[in-house]
Length: 253
Image 1 (cartoon, helix red, strand yellow):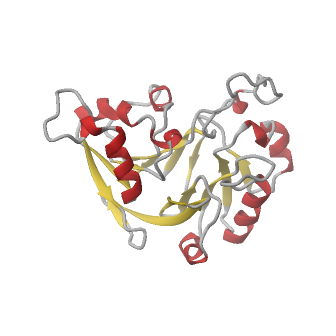
Image 2 (tube, helix red, strand yellow):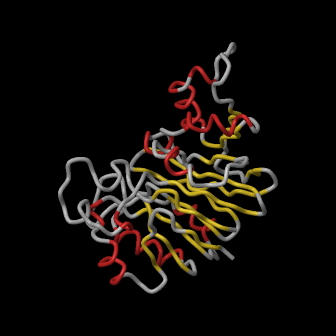
């Protein structure tokens, strides 16, 4: 399994518009972050987790081929704003989208033209799959385990595929879900910034969760400029915890 981090930033991206802080003005390419998304390549099948407003820019450098499934964590714009840019992939086949009923209903309201009874030519064509968070599901033969998460009070989804798990926009993980996160090779988990936040975990809170889940290694994602400079923060992290960055590619065993 190969994972490519298409974007590692939070809703505003980094640099934030108009900001002159040391992170937003950094010349280190690892301090520039598009909205969070990963592309998974597993057994010659591709699964995309989230499709934010930067998707077109993120995917242009990739080889054009079928996307076998899109897993959406929740309906916030920074996670679904690029859905319409999936239309070139609909020329290869309908695109299967998997998420909760809350997210899929929000998608129908934002893109009614894609789900109308009479659709005009050229619009994207999707097949929506509603997930029951208590049941594993399959994407073209690949088993996916949904994980319940709370983004403040909003129920959202994380996903586990084999020994890899992706948890973004985390504020709380219910006790019942930790069982699904045992024996991970690689955990990707959000860490918004150094300071606390109402609806996101901070860096220290993310490290506490990583210690409890105990994966072989962990990568931080969905980071704002408040996380600090990539190089400086990486130096203080545990040896098995890494700041992700846009374009990073890893293998999971």
